[in-house]
Image 1: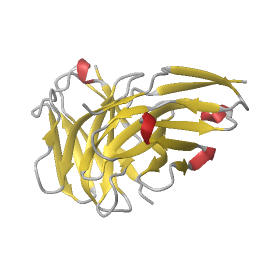
Image 2: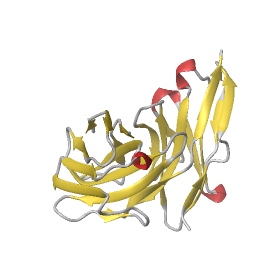
Image 3: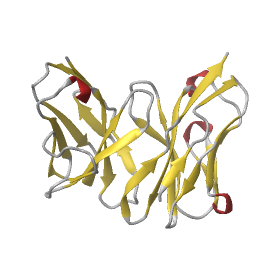
Image 4: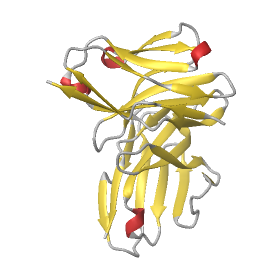
Length: 113
Length: 116
Protein backbone atom coordinates (compact mmCIF):
# COMPACT_ATOMS: atom_id res chain seq x y z
CA UNK A 1 0.00 0.00 0.00
CA UNK A 2 1.11 3.52 -0.72
CA UNK A 3 1.96 5.50 2.37
CA UNK A 4 4.03 8.29 3.76
CA UNK A 5 5.38 8.22 7.30
CA UNK A 6 6.59 11.20 9.22
CA UNK A 7 7.69 9.64 12.48
CA UNK A 8 8.01 12.87 14.43
CA UNK A 9 4.76 14.61 15.33
CA UNK A 10 6.54 17.49 17.05
CA UNK A 11 10.10 18.73 16.86
CA UNK A 12 11.59 21.56 18.87
CA UNK A 13 14.87 23.20 17.95
CA UNK A 14 16.62 26.35 19.03
CA UNK A 15 16.85 29.26 16.66
CA UNK A 16 20.07 28.98 14.71
CA UNK A 17 20.33 25.23 15.16
CA UNK A 18 20.22 22.74 12.34
CA UNK A 19 17.06 20.85 11.45
CA UNK A 20 16.21 17.50 9.94
CA UNK A 21 12.64 16.31 9.43
CA UNK A 22 12.22 12.69 8.55
CA UNK A 23 10.04 11.20 5.85
CA UNK A 24 9.75 7.61 4.71
CA UNK A 25 7.53 6.42 1.93
CA UNK A 26 6.14 3.22 0.54
CA UNK A 27 5.32 3.45 -3.13
CA UNK A 28 5.24 0.88 -5.90
CA UNK A 29 6.19 3.12 -8.79
CA UNK A 30 8.97 5.64 -9.21
CA UNK A 31 7.90 8.35 -6.80
CA UNK A 32 7.59 12.07 -7.10
CA UNK A 33 8.34 13.53 -3.68
CA UNK A 34 7.34 16.82 -2.16
CA UNK A 35 7.74 18.83 1.01
CA UNK A 36 5.12 21.42 1.85
CA UNK A 37 4.92 23.92 4.69
CA UNK A 38 1.72 25.19 6.26
CA UNK A 39 1.48 28.13 8.61
CA UNK A 40 -1.52 28.22 10.97
CA UNK A 41 -4.77 28.82 9.13
CA UNK A 42 -3.05 28.93 5.78
CA UNK A 43 -2.80 26.78 2.68
CA UNK A 44 0.23 24.78 1.70
CA UNK A 45 3.37 26.19 0.20
CA UNK A 46 5.71 23.99 -1.79
CA UNK A 47 9.22 23.98 -0.35
CA UNK A 48 10.82 21.62 -2.83
CA UNK A 49 10.15 18.62 -5.02
CA UNK A 50 12.03 15.68 -6.44
CA UNK A 51 11.09 14.20 -9.78
CA UNK A 52 14.38 12.75 -11.05
CA UNK A 53 18.07 13.50 -11.39
CA UNK A 54 20.24 14.82 -8.59
CA UNK A 55 19.07 13.26 -5.37
CA UNK A 56 19.91 16.36 -3.33
CA UNK A 57 17.23 18.93 -3.99
CA UNK A 58 17.40 22.59 -3.10
CA UNK A 59 14.24 24.45 -2.22
CA UNK A 60 13.03 27.80 -1.04
CA UNK A 61 13.82 29.42 2.30
CA UNK A 62 17.15 27.61 2.57
CA UNK A 63 15.68 24.11 2.76
CA UNK A 64 17.07 21.05 1.06
CA UNK A 65 16.08 17.40 0.92
CA UNK A 66 17.85 14.22 -0.07
CA UNK A 67 16.19 11.32 -1.84
CA UNK A 68 17.59 7.97 -0.74
CA UNK A 69 16.00 5.20 -2.71
CA UNK A 70 17.67 2.43 -0.70
CA UNK A 71 16.15 3.80 2.50
CA UNK A 72 12.86 4.97 0.94
CA UNK A 73 13.47 8.31 2.57
CA UNK A 74 13.23 11.95 1.65
CA UNK A 75 14.40 13.90 4.69
CA UNK A 76 14.18 17.67 4.84
CA UNK A 77 17.09 19.68 6.21
CA UNK A 78 18.02 23.23 7.01
CA UNK A 79 21.41 24.26 8.39
CA UNK A 80 20.14 27.10 10.57
CA UNK A 81 16.49 27.64 11.46
CA UNK A 82 14.80 30.97 11.95
CA UNK A 83 11.85 31.73 14.24
CA UNK A 84 9.72 32.19 11.12
CA UNK A 85 10.25 28.53 10.23
CA UNK A 86 7.84 27.48 12.98
CA UNK A 87 5.02 25.75 11.09
CA UNK A 88 3.62 22.38 10.07
CA UNK A 89 5.62 20.45 7.50
CA UNK A 90 4.12 17.80 5.25
CA UNK A 91 5.93 15.24 3.16
CA UNK A 92 4.01 13.92 0.16
CA UNK A 93 4.46 11.35 -2.56
CA UNK A 94 2.88 10.93 -5.97
CA UNK A 95 3.53 9.35 -9.33
CA UNK A 96 4.00 10.55 -12.84
CA UNK A 97 0.77 9.21 -14.17
CA UNK A 98 -1.33 9.24 -11.05
CA UNK A 99 -3.26 12.36 -10.16
CA UNK A 100 -3.27 11.80 -6.44
CA UNK A 101 -0.54 12.65 -4.04
CA UNK A 102 -0.46 11.15 -0.58
CA UNK A 103 0.40 13.24 2.42
CA UNK A 104 2.11 12.27 5.61
CA UNK A 105 0.53 13.26 8.91
CA UNK A 106 2.84 16.22 9.28
CA UNK A 107 5.52 17.37 11.70
CA UNK A 108 5.00 20.50 13.73
CA UNK A 109 8.18 22.48 14.17
CA UNK A 110 8.64 24.64 17.23
CA UNK A 111 11.49 27.13 17.51
CA UNK A 112 13.00 28.14 20.83
CA UNK A 113 14.38 31.67 21.04
CA UNK B 1 3.06 32.18 -11.29
CA UNK B 2 0.89 29.18 -10.37
CA UNK B 3 -1.43 31.00 -8.01
CA UNK B 4 -4.63 29.43 -6.72
CA UNK B 5 -7.25 31.44 -4.91
CA UNK B 6 -10.20 30.39 -2.79
CA UNK B 7 -13.28 32.33 -1.88
CA UNK B 8 -14.42 32.89 0.74
CA UNK B 9 -11.51 32.54 3.12
CA UNK B 10 -13.92 31.90 5.97
CA UNK B 11 -17.65 31.41 6.27
CA UNK B 12 -20.09 30.90 9.11
CA UNK B 13 -23.48 29.44 8.34
CA UNK B 14 -26.49 27.98 10.10
CA UNK B 15 -27.15 24.29 10.21
CA UNK B 16 -29.22 23.13 7.23
CA UNK B 17 -28.02 25.77 4.81
CA UNK B 18 -25.73 25.24 1.82
CA UNK B 19 -22.37 26.85 1.30
CA UNK B 20 -20.40 27.24 -1.92
CA UNK B 21 -16.63 27.53 -1.99
CA UNK B 22 -14.81 28.64 -5.13
CA UNK B 23 -11.35 27.60 -6.24
CA UNK B 24 -9.67 29.47 -9.07
CA UNK B 25 -6.37 29.05 -10.85
CA UNK B 26 -5.38 32.62 -11.58
CA UNK B 27 -2.52 32.34 -14.04
CA UNK B 28 -2.70 28.87 -15.49
CA UNK B 29 -5.20 26.38 -16.84
CA UNK B 30 -6.03 23.50 -14.58
CA UNK B 31 -7.60 20.44 -16.10
CA UNK B 32 -7.61 18.80 -12.70
CA UNK B 33 -8.46 20.27 -9.34
CA UNK B 34 -8.52 18.58 -5.98
CA UNK B 35 -10.52 19.19 -2.84
CA UNK B 36 -9.12 18.37 0.56
CA UNK B 37 -10.47 18.57 4.05
CA UNK B 38 -8.26 19.18 7.03
CA UNK B 39 -9.25 18.70 10.64
CA UNK B 40 -7.42 20.63 13.35
CA UNK B 41 -3.83 19.52 13.75
CA UNK B 42 -4.25 16.75 11.21
CA UNK B 43 -3.13 16.05 7.70
CA UNK B 44 -5.03 16.72 4.50
CA UNK B 45 -7.68 14.24 3.50
CA UNK B 46 -8.44 14.07 -0.21
CA UNK B 47 -12.17 14.36 -0.76
CA UNK B 48 -12.44 14.36 -4.52
CA UNK B 49 -10.73 14.95 -7.81
CA UNK B 50 -12.46 17.09 -10.38
CA UNK B 51 -11.67 17.23 -14.05
CA UNK B 52 -12.91 20.01 -16.26
CA UNK B 53 -16.11 19.08 -18.02
CA UNK B 54 -16.64 15.76 -16.30
CA UNK B 55 -18.00 14.40 -13.06
CA UNK B 56 -15.85 14.50 -10.00
CA UNK B 57 -14.29 11.35 -8.60
CA UNK B 58 -14.95 11.03 -4.90
CA UNK B 59 -12.80 9.20 -2.40
CA UNK B 60 -14.25 6.35 -0.46
CA UNK B 61 -16.42 7.51 2.39
CA UNK B 62 -17.10 10.98 0.98
CA UNK B 63 -20.78 11.65 0.37
CA UNK B 64 -21.33 12.79 -3.19
CA UNK B 65 -24.71 14.32 -2.42
CA UNK B 66 -23.33 16.22 0.55
CA UNK B 67 -20.27 17.64 -1.19
CA UNK B 68 -21.17 18.74 -4.71
CA UNK B 69 -18.24 19.53 -6.95
CA UNK B 70 -18.44 21.34 -10.24
CA UNK B 71 -15.47 22.02 -12.51
CA UNK B 72 -17.08 24.19 -15.15
CA UNK B 73 -13.99 25.72 -16.68
CA UNK B 74 -10.24 25.33 -16.82
CA UNK B 75 -9.84 27.91 -14.09
CA UNK B 76 -12.76 27.34 -11.74
CA UNK B 77 -13.99 24.54 -9.52
CA UNK B 78 -16.64 24.86 -6.85
CA UNK B 79 -17.43 22.81 -3.78
CA UNK B 80 -20.93 23.11 -2.37
CA UNK B 81 -21.57 21.73 1.08
CA UNK B 82 -25.28 20.98 1.07
CA UNK B 83 -27.45 20.97 4.17
CA UNK B 84 -24.43 21.70 6.29
CA UNK B 85 -24.22 20.40 9.85
CA UNK B 86 -21.78 21.22 12.64
CA UNK B 87 -19.74 18.11 11.86
CA UNK B 88 -19.01 19.59 8.42
CA UNK B 89 -17.09 22.39 10.09
CA UNK B 90 -13.55 22.12 8.86
CA UNK B 91 -10.78 23.70 6.83
CA UNK B 92 -11.29 23.03 3.12
CA UNK B 93 -8.34 23.38 0.77
CA UNK B 94 -8.31 23.11 -2.99
CA UNK B 95 -5.41 22.52 -5.30
CA UNK B 96 -4.93 22.66 -9.03
CA UNK B 97 -2.65 20.82 -11.38
CA UNK B 98 -1.16 22.71 -14.28
CA UNK B 99 -2.48 21.45 -17.58
CA UNK B 100 0.91 20.81 -19.09
CA UNK B 101 3.00 20.25 -16.04
CA UNK B 102 4.25 17.40 -14.00
CA UNK B 103 2.20 15.95 -11.22
CA UNK B 104 2.59 19.01 -9.05
CA UNK B 105 -0.33 20.57 -7.26
CA UNK B 106 -0.63 24.24 -6.36
CA UNK B 107 -2.67 24.89 -3.27
CA UNK B 108 -5.17 27.56 -2.42
CA UNK B 109 -5.11 29.35 0.94
CA UNK B 110 -8.04 27.37 2.30
CA UNK B 111 -11.56 28.13 3.49
CA UNK B 112 -12.56 27.86 7.13
CA UNK B 113 -16.17 26.67 7.39
CA UNK B 114 -18.01 26.92 10.68
CA UNK B 115 -21.53 25.54 10.89
CA UNK B 116 -23.55 26.70 13.87
